[in-house]
Amino acid sequence: MTTPDLTSFANLRDLGGHVGAQGRSLRRGRVYRSANLAAGSAEIIAQLATLGVATIVDLRANKERETHPTPWAEMGCKDYWFQDHTSNAANLVISMQDCLSQPAVVRERMVTLYRELPFTQREGYRALFSRLAEHRTPLLFHCSAGKDRTGIGAALLLSALDVPLESILRDYQETNNFDLRSKFKGHEIHTLAPAESLAAMSGAHPEYLEAAFAAIVAHSGSIAGYLQTVLSLSAAEIDRVRAHLLE
Image (cartoon, rainbow, N blue to C red; front, side):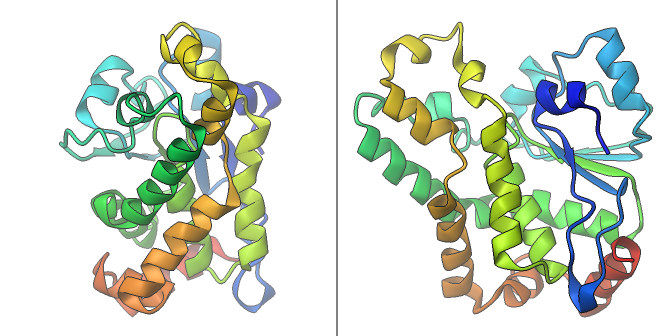
């Protein structure tokens, strides 16, 4: 289990404990999800190091990583994966700046974003699953806020392990215990956007994740179909992920 300090610092939590296929539980200490880890003090980095993370999958774009580099080496991590790309679609400060005064439009944009993320982030999700299939754990995956790109990644993984949808949605909404609006403090968006727009951007609303799942089903027929056709994962790889993570 993560400490309260780490949880409040970076929306960081262990996915262990969820009940999946054949009533088996996801092992603790194998997979963590989080937000950006760059702002950690030496004390926090020391705490992060105690997790023994062997692999980090960073779902952010180039500018995000350059501005807030992940302290992977300081954490003792040996395998740091990222994709060289410049998409700003998931950078909400940029992608929402033209509609901040219209909360309903912001919410619509978020739904659209979630419909697109399973496909625009496929390389990152493929890296997540392939490394788990190779037992490169403990593994931590993250984006900037640990909500959107990371939220879908967690939902895909839990779905592959046959965790019920209601549990997946509860895990997703745990991000609401972390004040993501504080991420916007000091930025002009915090003064320009009404509270409703900030809530639409920073909240983990079930309709967002449901939109992602609906898009996956419309495209691939099922989560299993998506894993096979979009992420190019074999049945053997999924079986190895299950065998490694479930007890």
